[in-house]
Length: 469
Image (cartoon, rainbow, N blue to C red; front, side, top):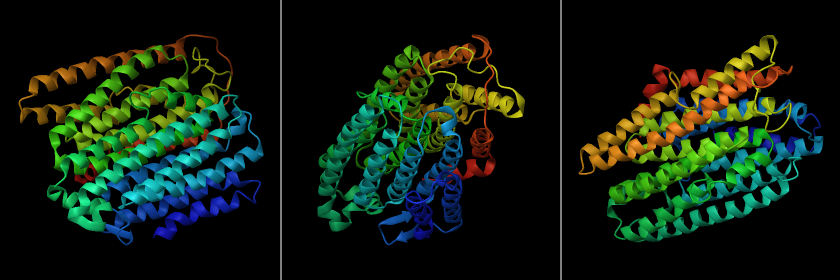
């Protein structure tokens, strides 16, 4: 099974050195990665892919499935990349080469049951995205690639240092098994150095949060995604951040057993402060890429908040909705900005024909869905998530404080809601009508995301998400 997961990416890596028309093969390669992941759902869990080192369970299989669907959509949109931006055939080949390495790293990172392998996979995915950023023809791409390498190195170093502290805290009890996630989870109550573990968890989480653009580094991600080709921004939001939040899920499950109150205090302060800053940055943002990028930070903070509050179903539903909605919006940006960068007014006007009308409809729905208007999955996930936060507070002496926190969050989300409504109105009603063209592969990619969002709300999907964890 592991070879079936890795073989398509390895094939793409080798083909990128030889074939000139390699991009036509990429959607089929992404589809080939999806097939063994679907097969994993049929197998009993946990399912060992490589001893105790790579183990598939319901959580990481779900994350891998969502990531593979995003990958298919991104590769479909890549077919028309040269129709919207200046890109050389050599840059496209380089992009696919590092895209293959990116996938290999993600597979190891998401499926890892070993903290060391998880870190290696995440580092591999991080380094490969540096070179994908450099394929962009924008003047600021090289500068932002170096910025990403510096910030990514800081974040991944924090994760590594935190892992060392966690290993040191559990080694007297678990021995060499202290590197395994499942062993740590099952024996967490026996760890006799909880302070050392909590320090390791806090440092590791800070590394994860920096990689997702949380406080205090809120702008670096938006700058990088602005300087990159729009499919790279879709990979960041729909796939790379999925691997990062998957690591946070794993570590926080263990921290919850060690000391729940410390976990809640740390994550609540960090995420609410992040959303506070991001909401005003979104209000002042002037172009699609920055608005969508900053919005992604807000949603990842909500996912982390719902998860530690006991709303695992809400967190996973929100995770899936974000993973489909945000790449769809980033890919739409390639079409919306093809008449000129940063042009928001009238961006939804001028699309004709079946493809154009379908594009207009889908982008409108995605824009309204990302701000949690029903029947968007995010409407239900936030409803359940905030409900889980209040339910958790009922069993403590902090109900009033929790109601205050939820109220503050709703106020901040209202600011973001207002900005997106204002943006949508400007795109639809203002500016001149200029004839624009949408390609079939782009509409197909957006349709794939729309269908995935519908499936996410199906009874079978809801039942599966409730059964995880």
